[in-house]
Length: 204
Image (cartoon, rainbow, N blue to C red; front, side):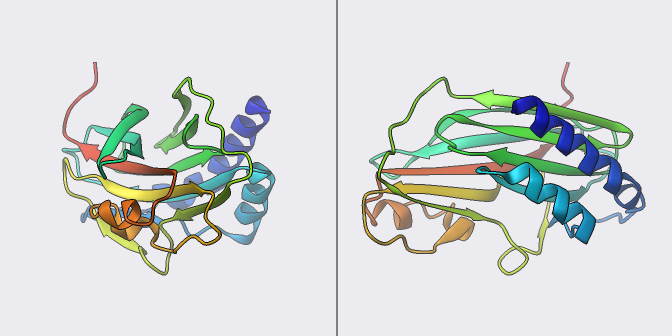
C-alpha cells in the first residue's frame, strides 16, 4: 500500500511540475495547492482511508531547507514534538504533499523541488488505541489559509487531528495552533498538529 501511495504521489507531481516551475514570484509564500480536476482525481485515489493535503511554496535564494514536524498536545497544553524531519530545498518553487491516517503513528511527506521529487515516512513507533473515538482532521484550506507569508524560523500550522470519546468536536482547525489551550480546554484525549518551517540552514 505504501508503494502505491508513493507511486500516485509521483504521478501527481509529474502532472503539476510545469505549473509549479512557472511561479517566479519574489515574495515568499505558502499556498494551499490549487489542483486541477485531473490532479484532484488522482488525489482521491491516493487518499483512500487516509487524509492528504497539498501546498505550493515560493521562496527566496536564501531558503535552503524545510522542516516538517508532528506535535502532540500534552495534558498541560504544551505541544510536544513527536516526529518529523528536514528536507533540502534546491529550487525557489515547489509542492509539498502530506498524507497520514493517524498522526499519533506518523505521516508521509513528498516534496517536488525543481526536477527532483522525494518522499519520506516519519514514524513515531507508537500504536495509539483510539478505537470507538470520534476523529476530526482539519487542514489549512482556502477558506482559512489561502496564502501564508513565509518567515524564516516561523512554523506554519497546516493540519490538526483530534481523537476523542466526546460526542462533539469543535471546529477550531489550524488557526489556534499558537493558542493550544483552546484545544486543551475541550478535554480531548488526543490532539496532534503538523507544521512546516522554512530555514536558511543548509543540510549536510
